[in-house]
Length: 130
Image 1 (cartoon, rainbow, N blue to C red):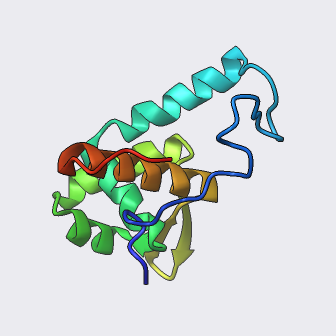
Image 2 (tube, helix red, strand yellow):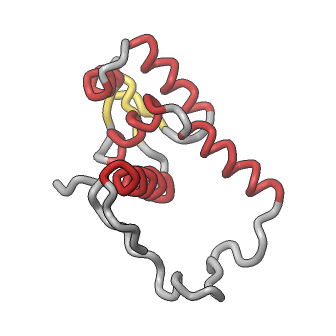
């Protein structure tokens, strides 16, 4: 399986053009969209939550697997997952007695991967690119 942190997400055709606008949301973002985006970025601002989301870019996982992957204490992981769930950044399903967590959509997956790709450039000094 490819490492999503190293995966380069291709921009949409024409995205490098200054006149490019999203076909879904053309024009200037309105206050509700800006507030929703700021909430997402606020939830991504914690390294443990970001790591949990990165693990979930690889597929769904339960709290035990997420705890092992990020190395934080289980109560802390559960609290972070509760915040992410309340913010709509993770979804859950029951599998017997286990609760399984997953990312709700590809937008969030790509956002997490791109944030970590950018961080990789900042840390390693690799040249910037589109």
